[in-house]
Length: 141
Image (tube, rainbow, N blue to C red):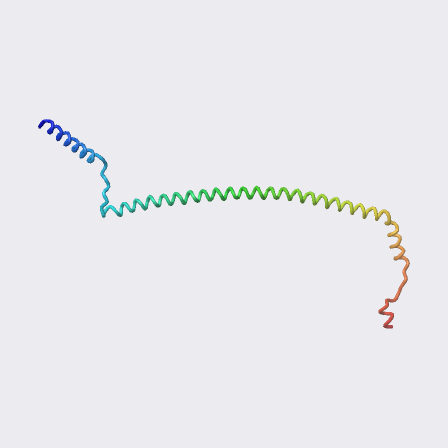
């Protein structure tokens, strides 16, 4: 019985020794001491600052991407609008040209039809002079 008790105590001591050895070989545990607090705070601030910087850079990149997509979308809309209205302008220009050509032909036809009579009337007015005193001068005399 005494032997069993000694064996039991010996096993407990070995387990305790093993635990101590494990603790000593393990990395040192960080103990919060007043002198360590500023260093820990500095490290925490560095980590927070890195995270903020990363988030700001990510947000900036995302915003730039959205701006570029918006710019492309608006450029496509403008090109589509321009193409639609450019075709409308061409059609309006063609219609205006057709109307102008029709008016020119109409004027040419009227000139051919009565051109000789107009020239004859002009020559007659120039050659057949009838002097007349204007009404304002005739009244004052």
